Image (cartoon, rainbow, N blue to C red; front, side):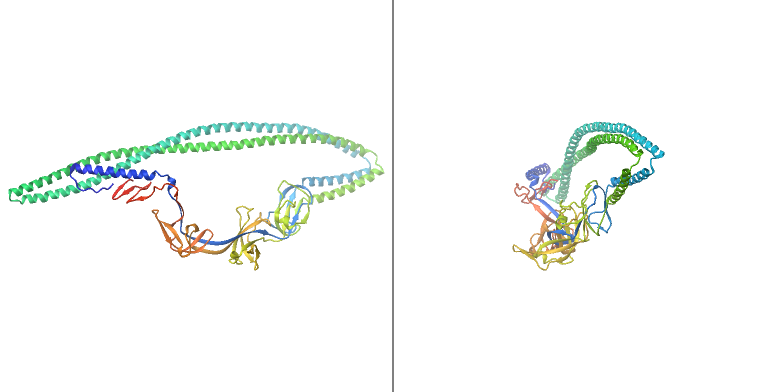
Length: 640
């Protein structure tokens, strides 16, 4: 605090000093409270940006569609469960390339069975022609015994499966109970942690309040010390002046020769001596006050250090307890997920138990029927052969041969191969899906482009390798578009995917509708996407102008246009200055600046002023009053 006072003797000087300090401090505090009574939201919110070098792009956009001709629907020729997909959408395939496979288990089993049936039919025919032998009878007996053994094995397997499945269900239920118990324990821990964190936050807030109060005391001590120092300097200067005056008046006294002259100057010298003595007393009192205040300041600083340590400890405890709380909350979430998984495991184990029981029942029943079939077959085989039997067995051989041919063809049909070379436009199957027989057919443009459910094609092939996008542009944009310009294609159906492209053609003749003239522009995609489908809606953005390595600012920061264009520059102290600039290319989001500002300068992008609120953050007279700074009133500075 700096205050200029006229020199006053002794106690009068100190009284005036204190009065002025109190008066000025009161004005400063009143102004501070008045200003800060307004809500924080009454202040203007300013968003700034930095002038930098970069690229300015201007583009034209329109909406069109993806196009691709000559589609072909390719399906399996037999039904089955899809087990493999060998191609992806957008992949180029050659003729005969594998597209996908369906489950060949049953087909191979049928093939093996057909081969066995043929061998059996041929053996039966040969055996019938040769007649029943002792070896055949022995073989029939063995077959019957094997069928009986199969029944015994099926029954034993059923008993073992039942025990195993019951144990699986029991284990899953036990795990669910364990996880529920662990979840409850962590839920209780989280409750305790919340209470602990609340207590820690209270302690930390209390410590912070204490530290702030200590800091205020230390700040006040320093200000008072500075005041005393300023006063001591003023007193020292006054003492020097009074001492010089005393010396000069003493010389004048010594030079007097008359009694009246000596009496007059003696009175003046005595007055000078009185002032010098008063100055010494004032300096002595100032020194005492300074010593006392310095001691108080040291005590306040020591208390501040102690309270800051307490605050740091409270903060560490709070952070540690928050970390523990987060860990316990994560454990609760983990066990919630595990409980859901446990329930699913129980359901899965129960379903597996039911499935195993049904399968074992069917196996036992089949084994019993096999015994009966084998016994009857043995009787039939050992009976004398007749002409009709021979004819029937010969027919069986022919049927078995035909069945084998069909089985071999069915196995081959479990693999689907590309009938022609092309590009995979769509793959509609998913692993595990039941595929229906459909064969190969031409797809209509409407069904292939929309990907509608009107076709059940497993794979749709198209005959071109590069897709294109077409869009209609207004004549004002079409005039800026030229072949070869870069563009970007985005498809709303494919989120977060941008495809590079380039302009390949611009229609020379436009189309007019309701007075609006548009020109079709075609762009070729430079990169394919596996999810892209013909007919999809496409947003085409074409770069019509570009400036590289130029000064740029956000377009929102530029006010006016042409010769009246300007920006608002913000200096390091927050002062704003409206500056004229020369603009170049105005891009989609930023604008080229040719002159007026330099790289690195801060400019205002938006400034929202709460004009509807009570405005108290203003300037009055020579004083500036603000929430964070001090208050200046004429030559007196009050505040921190």
